[in-house]
Image (cartoon, rainbow, N blue to C red; front, side, top):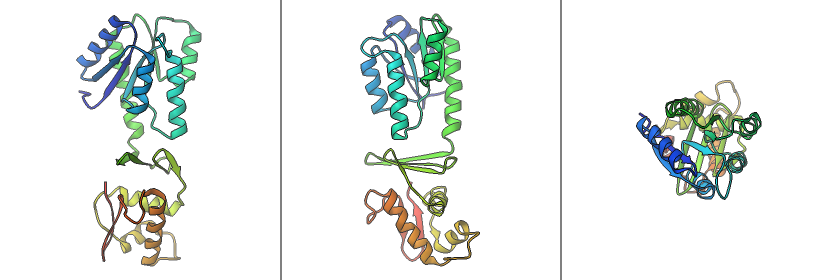
Length: 237
C-alpha cells in the first residue's frame, strides 16, 4: 500500500481526471485532483506532493510551463525533486523530447492503461525513495534542515551551507544518532581519527559553536545541536 504517498493529478478532462484518480486510489495512493494549471502550480510550490501526474493541455498555465517552473524552483532553492509523469493526447516525438528535456520523469500518451500508469507511479516512487534515503530532512517553525550524505551537503531553509569537511563529519555523526548523547571524547575518536592535531575536548566545543552559527536560527538557543551539561552533545531530531 502507498497510503503515505500523496499524488497530485492535474487534467482538465473530468473523465480522465476521475479515471486516473480511481486507478491510483485502487492501488492504495492518496490522490488529490485539480483541473487547471494555476491551482496545480500553487499547490506544488506550497506543499510538494510525492508524485505529480500532469496533463500537457491545461487552461491558464500549460503542463510544460508548470514543469519548467517546478524544476527551476527546485534547482534554485535546493528542493528535493518531485517525480512528474506527463500525460498527453499528442504522440509526436517532439513533445515527448521537450517534456523529458524539461525534467519529466515519464511520459504517457492517451489513451493509456490505468494499470500501466499505476505501475509507473510505483516505479518512480521506489526510485525516489531510494534516492532520498541518503538524505535526512528536519523542520521546525517553517525552517528546514536537509543533510545529504552522498553529496556531503547541508541545506538550511533552502540555502546551501558552507561547511568544512570536519564540520560535516561531526554533524553527520551526531545526526545519525538522534537523541543519543555523545561525549566529546567519543566525537574526537570518531571524527578526528586521522588527525594528530587539536585532539582536545576544546576542538569539539569550537566545531559545535561553528556549526550552530551556520545551521541554527538562534545559535545561542540551539534547536538541533543540544548541549548536555558536563557530558557532551546530542542531535535533537
